[in-house]
Image 1 (tube, rainbow, N blue to C red):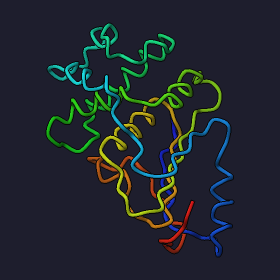
Image 2 (image 1 turned 30 degrees about the vertical axis):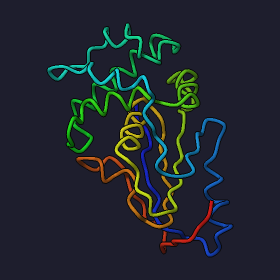
Image 3 (image 1 turned 45 degrees about the horizontal axis):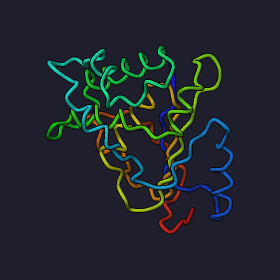
Image 4 (image 1 turned 60 degrees about the horizontal axis):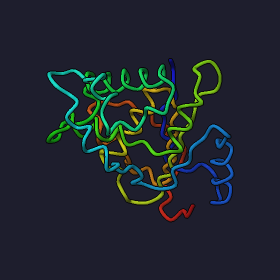
Length: 194
């Protein structure tokens, strides 16, 4: 399923207010807004999920029966889709290699927040895709957990749009190869407040 995974760097508008009106055009009822980085955090149960990746395979059935599994509330076809997408991220080696990267990926993917899970539950693949907009206006870098969750949501079917008036990297430094389409809008601005 084709999805949008783009970053708009810089500002083409003359005034800060015009820039925020431009960003606001992209907000829909299907949109989750992330106002700053970092945003992802590991749930306490996620640490128990790290052991469910062995010999290059995600142990899906063991994950589903684990007491740490938080997505059993979602419809079963979506759970299967999510686990398949997680397996793809692991196989494609999207995330830069760090110590215990597979365990970090599994634990982080199993830590989506409630609002995101609700959008996933509503997603039916035939209508509008859920959307995630990240506003990156500071020097704060996204963490590896941010990069994992964003890549995971993109694989699931979310349209992702990152607005970075500064042009600074946010999550893309954690990817082994370019998966974010970057578009230059104009001059960089460093003092925009959301």
